[in-house]
Length: 100
Image (cartoon, rainbow, N blue to C red; front, side, top):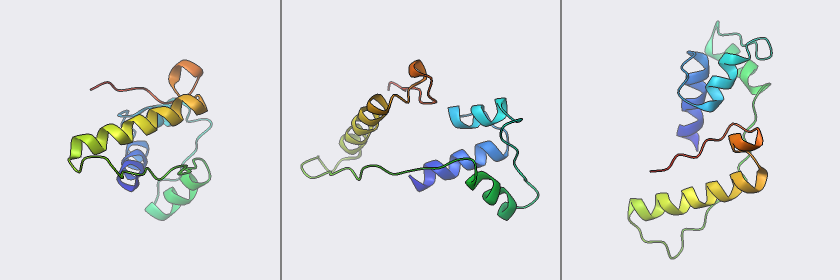
């Protein structure tokens, strides 16, 4: 989660439209004013405009220790919460389901 959010922050700061979160900030600059004069100021501004809440620590007991099994389980849980919280784009949210 830490790496993922760090990437979101970097994409937003550098106006890189690599994810739906950074696209949202780029497309709504009148709503999301960010002071980019220093990392500290940027972090303070961003903290006031975005919040991340971890809602589940996935229990990987019984999941094979290979990376593919772990990723599959984590993706299943992510999709479960996205659907239950209605955060996919089809419901007006920012989540886009990536099929691999």
